[in-house]
Length: 190
Image (cartoon, rainbow, N blue to C red; front, top):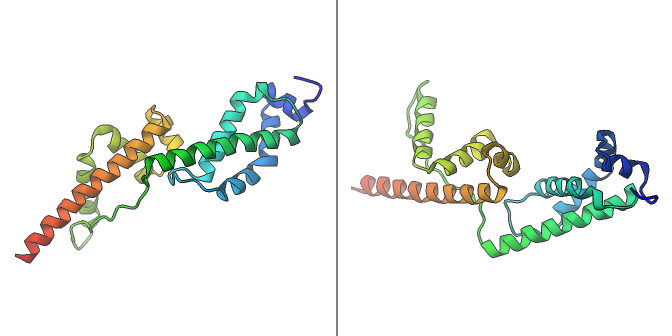
C-alpha cells in the first residue's frame, strides 16, 4: 500500500469484502454497459462474461495497483479492454459462431400426456450420441442454463474447453439431425 492508495483500495488489497463491494457498486454497471458497446467477433463472449473476467483479473492483480478508487476505474476498464480485444481476435481467428442456433426437427408427434415423455426420450437419445464431455457441456449450457464460466467450474475444465466442446457438440447434433431429416424426407417421398 502506498500513500496514494485511498481507504477503499487499501481495504481491497487487504481482502476486505466491504471494500470490494464498494468498488463493485461504483464501477460494475458502467463496465458492463461500456463492454456491451464494444465489438467482439466471438459471439460466445458476452459483455457480462468479459466484465466478470475483468473483475477476476483485478482481484488477482490488485496488489500491483496503486491509486485511488477513481484511478481503479481506469485500471479496471483497461483490463476489460484488453480482454475484449483478445476475445475479438480469438473470434476472428476462429471464424465461426459457436452459438449459432441449431434447427431441431420436431420430436415424434404423440398426442396425450405421454407426449412429454416421448420428447424427453428423443432428446436424451440425441444427447446420448455425443461424446461424454460434449454431452456434459451441452447439458450444462443448454439444459441447465449455466454460462461458460460456471460450466467450466462445474466440469473442472477451462472456459476455452467449454466453448470448443459446445461448438463441436452443436455441430455434431446439426449433422445428425440433418441426416435424420434427409432420411425422413426421402422415405416420405417414396
